[in-house]
Image (cartoon, rainbow, N blue to C red; front, side):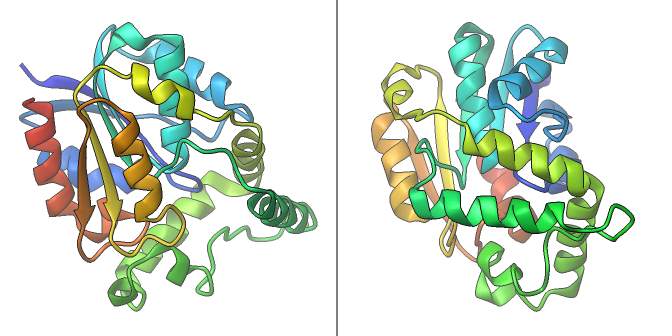
Length: 235
């Protein structure tokens, strides 16, 4: 019987982030992608996910989705059977990250209500993708499309939630399910050292460094991610 698998996207991402894995895992997992654009609080996001989730489920999360995964584990640890943390961190923002995040929010609020919200621009792509993938037109179009669908107000809600998130590092030693930590080799936003901290803090966690990836492995190397998922779900 397929394992229930909840997939949590990152900032300015939607179900398209995971579409390759949903297709590849259809015989192994019953996948469901959460909408994390409706709330401005990480705990509220977690509660929304839990309200519609199966009683027991595997949980995979990327970036901001990882913050929500930690909140789910705090609220309902007995419901999670497997955990995958991808290109995320247990740390709260640094002062510099807070400053940049608030600046982006202020710029976004200045946009005219009828103006087109892009969220991700060509200038930002090098911070999201492996250098080999920055010129991939199809990949860029997928990223722009997700950001536009999340939209201006969804972006502001997500940024507010991220700003207020707690430090989840004290929670790491209490995680007692099969856990896989994944990180793109060229991730600039949550680099290898951050992933190593997660893997070292969670008992028995496996760490996988993904070649040819920046911050968005499910889109950059979908087959590699799916292969790791299958092995993880069979643990």
